Length: 363
Image 1 (cartoon, rainbow, N blue to C red):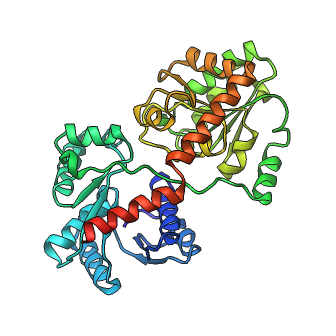
Image 2 (cartoon, rainbow, N blue to C red; image 1 turned 30 degrees about the vertical axis):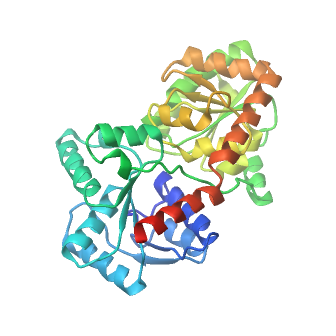
C-alpha cells in the first residue's frame, strides 16, 4: 500500500521491491491512488494494481476499501508505505474487520516539510500507527534511532531493512537520449548530480562549489539532472555565476543513463534517509562526494566516498577537485562503493530479507 501514484522516491522503492519479490516466491499486489504513472510502471511487471482513494481527510471510505481488498485477495501480510496509506490500514484493522499482520515502512521523518499547525497532528498520527502495527521498518540505523528515541516504537519492533535497487544498466535508447540532450557530454571531466530541484537537495551549494572547482580545474563541466519546484530560481542563480556553458541543466532524463558519463557523482542534500540516487551511484561504480548525513554515511562505509559537511561549498569543491586530480583515489572510492552495493543493496538480497520478515509476522 502506498497513497500516491506519482513517481517519487517512495514509489521507486515500492516498484523496485515488487520486482524483487517476484523473483523470490512472493505474489505481490499493489494498492495506490488510481491514474498515476506508478500504476502502469508496476503493471508492466505483471503485478496487479488496485485503485484506493487514499487522501489526507481521513474519511472511512479508503479504510473500507483496504479491508475489502485484503479479503478479496486473501493477503497474508499488508505492507504499508508512508504515513497516510498505513494510517488507513490501521483503521481497516481496527474498524473494518481486516485480520492480517501489518507492517509500516516509515521512510523517515518529513514533518519539517509541512506547516507548523499540522506538525503536532502528524506526530500524533505517527505514534498511533507505530503502536498499532507488528513492525515499523526503518531504512537506516539513523531512522531506527529516531523512531526509538522519539518513543514511537521499541527497538525490538523496528527492523532495519535498506532499500535495494536493480542493476542500473541503461538501454541503448536511454544512452542516446542523454547524448541528444547534452551533445557534448563526453567533453572534459564531468561532475554530475541527479536530484529533484528542491531546497532539500542543496543544489545551490553545488553551484557555488562548481565555481571553485573551475578555478582549480578549468576544463571541468557540471551536469544537473532533474526537475522540481525551484528550477526557475536555480536557473536564475546559475546565470549570475561565471560558469557559462560549463554548466548544463538537463531536465528529466533516465538517471541510470547519466551516471556513466560522470567522473564524480555528487549528493549534497541537507537531509536524507537512504536515497535511491546514492545507491545508483554506488552500483554504477562512480567516485562519490556526499554530505555528512548519517543514513548515507552508514550506506557508504569508511572508504566509498569523500564526505563533506552540509552546505559547505568550499569543502564540497575541495573534495571534487581531489577526485578529479587523483584518478587512483577516484578509482579506489568507486570500487569501494560498488563493493558496498554488492554487499548490502542488491535487489535480490534485500527482497529475500523482506520475504523472511513477511514469513516471520505471518506465522
